[in-house]
Each structure stands twice: as C-alpha cells, then as structure tokens.
Amino acid sequence: MSDRFSLRARPVQPREPAVPDSVDRAFIGQLVRDFYGRVRADPRLGPIFAGEIGQAWEPHLEKMTDFWCSVILRNGAYHGRPVPAHIKLKQVRPEDFDIWLDLFRQTVSQRCEPALAAVFVERAERIATSLKLAMFYRLPAAGVAAGTDPTPPGEG
Image (cartoon, rainbow, N blue to C red; front, side, top):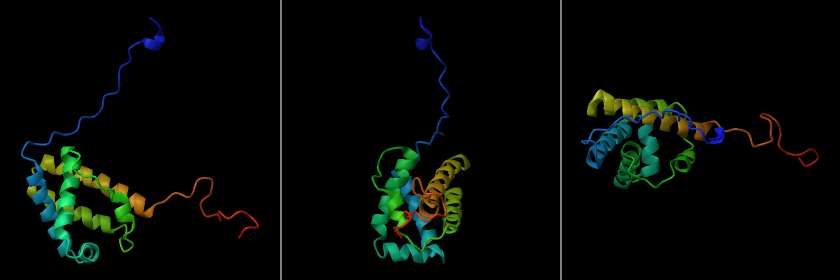
C-alpha cells in the first residue's frame, strides 16, 4: 500500500463539557431573565440597554434565550447576527464588557453548579472577546500600512 493512503492518527478533539439534562430552554430562559435584570439595574449598562431596547424587553429576552440555547444546547435556535447588532452601539466602551462579564459570572454562579457555571462563563468570555474585537480593534485595509494615508499620491 502506498504511503499516500497510510492511516495517520487524527488529532484528538477536546470534548465539550457535558451539560446536564436539567439544562433546557426553561432553565436558560430563567438565567437570561435574571442576568438581564442585573444589566437593567446596572448604572452603566442599564441606560445603554434601555436606549436600544426601550420597552421591547420580552422580544429581546426571547432572542437572548434562543441565543444561549444555541450556545449551550447547540440546538440552532438562534438565527441572528450579533456582530452587526453590536457594532452600531457607539456608546459602548471596551470596559463595558468587563461589567457585562462580572454580572454574567454573578448570575451563573448563583444559578448553576460550579461545573455548569464554568461552561457558561467560558462561552461568555469567548463571546465578549469576539464582540470586543469586532467593535474596537480593526485591522487596516489590505495593502494599507497602519498609520498611512490610503489615498494614492496626487489624488488627495
């Protein structure tokens, strides 16, 4: 048999931590509502969310329940685009993500067993990092060195 077809060991993929059967849409919905209750009461985040959501909290909470069901249960319930929704929020600062994560950690630590809380927090940290990178840290356009004027000479 040719070396091209020899069997090679595949890299071991890390297994996702198991989520208990008790974690279902109802559980996640309650967690989302508890968390956003904290967000709404926060002196920094509360006004930001109120300015964007207004009185339409129930649809937002349902959307966030779908989002977290997709993240934790991998059920495909969420069909939105979080990055474009967050990029338009000009009043958000990078340090707001620290507040968001602190409130999230408080919520899951009070509602979940430690192993499950760790799963939620790990995913929340990845989400926060992704959103923060998308919102605040952009690479220069391809072929344009950082700090240079992209306008060709004689066209400016």
